[in-house]
Length: 152
Image (cartoon, rainbow, N blue to C red; front, side, top):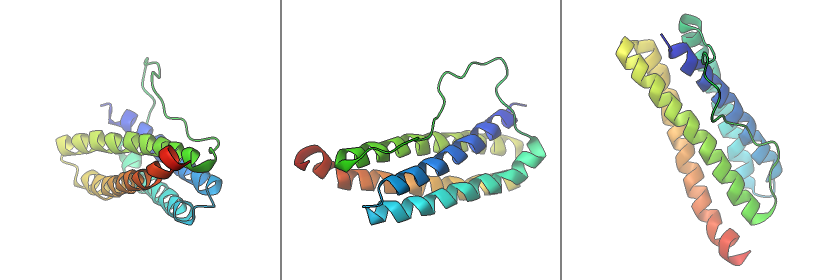
């Protein structure tokens, strides 16, 4: 069974996304909505990681065997400045959140195949919140784009 590989990927991706939300919150404090909502979303990712623990306790987690990491998520180590910087940082968050979202989808498929109701309940709650995060990021990027791309 390879589900533990995806559980490990998912826990790591949630942790990276949480740290990245905190980085953007701290780097864009002049944008109160971004600052406070990113801190809230970071806590949500932390909760996802904790909620996933019960599933990890049952199935375990592991790294891919004999497979080089071709694409891996790295969190934001620093933020950019100005309107264009905000837009690019939000876009980076969107890419990380998309990775988390598609990984939840793969874990959901495994849960359905296993007929594991507990796993499906965890996925349902966490994946829906991740989709909401993606929606907010898309909306906030649309709001920031005119100023960043035209007026700045």
